Image (cartoon, rainbow, N blue to C red; front, side, top):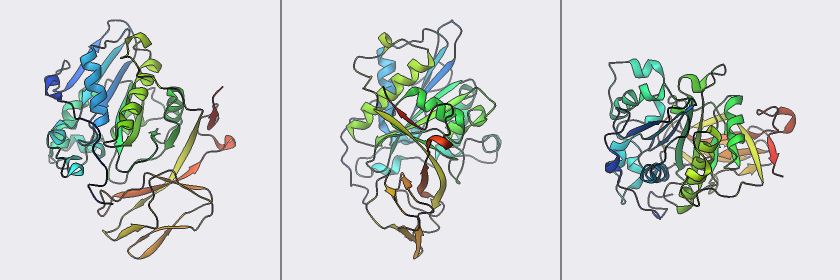
Length: 335
């Protein structure tokens, strides 16, 4: 699939009006209600070409939303990459030097010998992130696919996803071999810590539907956190809940060894293969096969293909007797 495969259906907001921030960190705005409560954060632009989150955070700031309890942080992360967006090559502004969403370990952040645009930005934002109780990181996908919640490897993440209630598919995973994501940083990634985080993949990067999903997910996250009331939201942000939710456990990533990788079909994600051993692609000429029956493909894409990049993940649909969300069933039927 070529870089120009998807049309750009949405306008990119001018976020320079939000420069400066109220938190002491550029483009990061924190509002304190003065009433005890959690610190909730909605983050956009972890990747510079994923615009739906920027549209949502821009709209909330322009709307003048303020928390009724606790604190609320609204942030734009990789603003340098965003400023370089070029409609003729829209994938190239994902990052400048390295992926902002692969640097979130203390060892990497503390390593003074390493410098990059993304590391500098993560280090600037880190003191704020360290104080956050509940994080929502808004993303979008290379390919046009159904939206999903990335809940991380822990039961608490899956439980938060189900409590937020949308999108309908919850993916539980260990992250990427390349490095740790913001949603797994610090206490977010520790089972014993009350801190929690979700990453929402809202749809294809430049489709209008991704914005609608981002608005709904953000509204539901903030309402669940208890920092706002429904009347505080911009009109029309809440969408109907999906009739059911499905939890999928990622069992293994498929990582490209070289540039010689191709899929066996035009996969976009959430395809389920009935039998183990089904060929779904080839890596260096060798077949890549499903490891078990009823295997789901999670976010297949070759748009960022290079050695070491995850090109797809294998997922096992969680059944009631093996739910990661206990005591909530993995497949939740709405009343």
